[in-house]
Amino acid sequence: MTHHVSSMLETYPKDLGDIDQQKLAECIEACFECAQTCTACADACLAEDMVAQLSTCIRKNLDCADICATTGRVLSRQTGNNAEVTRVVLEACRAACKACGDECAQHAGEHEHCRVCAEACRRCEAACADLISSLG
Amino acid sequence: MTHHVSSMLETYPKDLGDIDQQKLAECIEACFECAQTCTACADACLAEDMVAQLSTCIRKNLDCADICATTGRVLSRQTGNNAEVTRVVLEACRAACKACGDECAQHAGEHEHCRVCAEACRRCEAACADLISSLG
Amino acid sequence: MTHHVSSMLETYPKDLGDIDQQKLAECIEACFECAQTCTACADACLAEDMVAQLSTCIRKNLDCADICATTGRVLSRQTGNNAEVTRVVLEACRAACKACGDECAQHAGEHEHCRVCAEACRRCEAACADLISSLG
Amino acid sequence: MTHHVSSMLETYPKDLGDIDQQKLAECIEACFECAQTCTACADACLAEDMVAQLSTCIRKNLDCADICATTGRVLSRQTGNNAEVTRVVLEACRAACKACGDECAQHAGEHEHCRVCAEACRRCEAACADLISSLG
Image 1 (cartoon, rainbow over the protein chains, first blue to last red):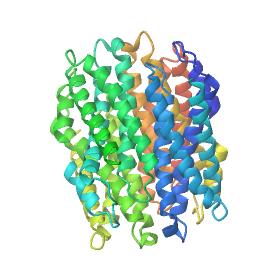
Image 2 (cartoon, helix red, strand yellow; image 1 turned 180 degrees about the vertical axis):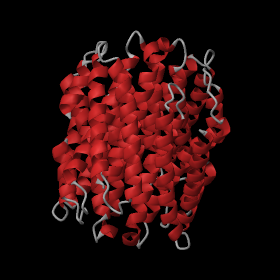
Image 3 (cartoon, each protein chain N blue to C red; image 1 turned 60 degrees about the vertical axis):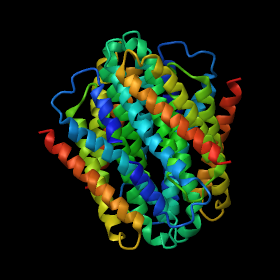
């Protein structure tokens, strides 16, 4: 998807300001990927026989999916940017990805979907941290 | 809607912990209401002849709608609560509501939809601040 | 919330066409309410000791929450309306509400949250059907 | 993203039934990509000097983004599948992608973002049609 995210950034008709476009594109991509992966992980957990032991994991998956989806949308918009809102949304996304990644990592040995999901969460958490740093 | 939000909190099968249920219900309700109002305000701005002067307002409406919708969902879940994620999501929602409320308030005299929307944003901003305070 | 939904419809700056505004407002309200209730019901099911027997119910709750949220947003927009898209989205919402309402109704005797949720689904299903009929 | 979508389908712990997994993965990927692209196209349209002539395009972008995001989520879930809901959601997504793709195609010569967006809509429309056909 990164190709398409970058294409849309390149076609934006006004100046994008001094944001790091590469980090922005990577973060948008990571948010959408993590939203999809967490949605699928919640569903896969729900199909496990031991679902009763995975309720906290499902909860964190659902929160992380929603927060990543919203963060991906906010970052996809450039018109009338508000640095403060961008920053707090990125902080929320980083925290949700850390919480979900930590939880999924605990089940990574038993559940392959949690292993894949923990990786997506780590990647998105890092992408948010990188973008926050680049915002100065 | 508050009646239904409260009904669902009352039927939650486990202990809700020491959260202030009244403030929680009010904040959930304010988030869903603000998400709807901001979606409608973005659309009403789009229908104005002077839409070119409202692009920043539309952007803030769209961000606020997404962030409120996600916050309303996160707050509607009680299983495996994570205080840190709840807090940063509420902070993001408060910031988005403040940004959108400030913007809409500037057009409240000219556009009735911005006046109604500014009120919804103020109410949601205050509900988030109240709930954050009650989290201790 | 209906009061606020109606307020925003009344402040729309252009002609709303010949849509039944009362039915439209009721359907928007029902969609947002059902989205909140289904999100909470999925979470309450997740907290039940017998969660393993509620996985289908949780799945239907999650789908219904997403579809109602999207339908509520589409209906909240009046600019450049597309009758065909409005109709198919309403059909999808009606089907999701019927599926979730039927499932929750089966657990209504055991789980109070499913009883409340089944009612919200029935109300939203009926509101979608009413609005579809009024579209002619 | 397709790699990750497929990874999650492969780690699903139960039988996926006789759905065409390749077409399913492609449709999920197309939905998330189209949701991102339409969100960015609405924002790029908002930044154009001639935004007043693009209000219908923005409306279709916003609807298409919401419907694609919801469809991508519904398709990412396999537990307790409901063929009827899957089908009507895919029909709604196909219609929204057609409406948005047709609109963006009219501005493709003037606005590069509309050209890229029209392609994403066409791809998603085709992926939905393919998946509907494969459902039998």
